[in-house]
Length: 77
Image 1 (spheres, rainbow, N blue to C red):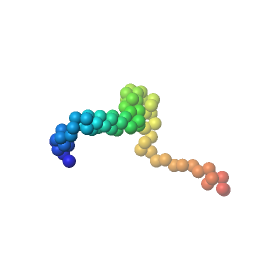
Image 2 (image 1 turned 90 degrees about the vertical axis):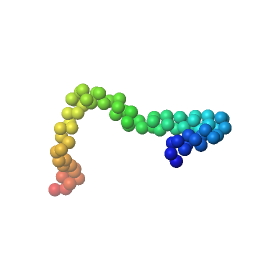
Image 3 (image 1 turned 180 degrees about the vertical axis):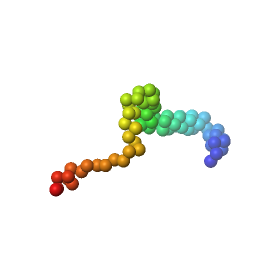
Image 4 (image 1 turned 135 degrees about the vertical axis):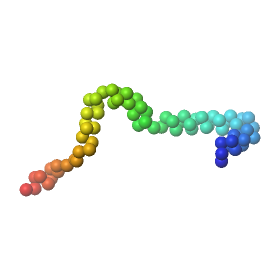
């Protein structure tokens, strides 16, 4: 359904049902917006990471290979 069709259908409802639809729509929009805590945290810390090089110092190693030393393999010899 297109937005204009939805609005037209809502306008055809009695006033009390229109208010209910609007109230529930606003509730779900707000709930959907607030349900991503990782996005909120990233936005809150963005300026810190942008301005403080100590927080991003290890990103210089992002392109280097990583080799895991496994303790169980080292002790078998």
